[in-house]
Length: 106
Image 1 (spheres, rainbow, N blue to C red):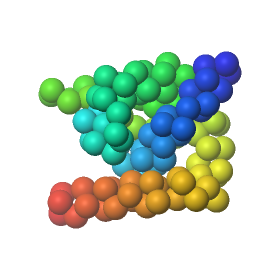
Image 2: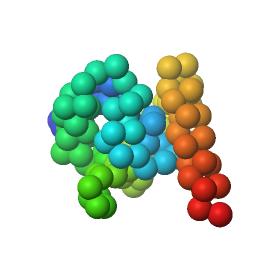
Image 3: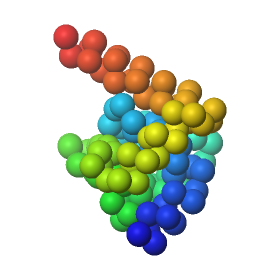
Image 4: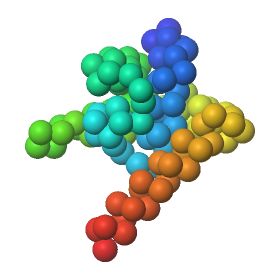
């Protein structure tokens, strides 16, 4: 539980969780959303993965990240993000990414 609280203590990590709400993303796609270095984003992703909040899957040369949906902290975080003025636009962006990917597949 300590790792979960440490992971959620960072605004950047909470924003990453919001971006992953509706769509999985590569580390590069996530890094493009922030004005911090790619290694810093990778470190944040590592903390989230260690806490069990995100999972990664290597496909080719890219690592894809997604939420661990059945983690209680993600469920609670998602609920809180519904009323958070900072997270709401990030979740909308995530939904748009997911929609665009579905459209591209059809």
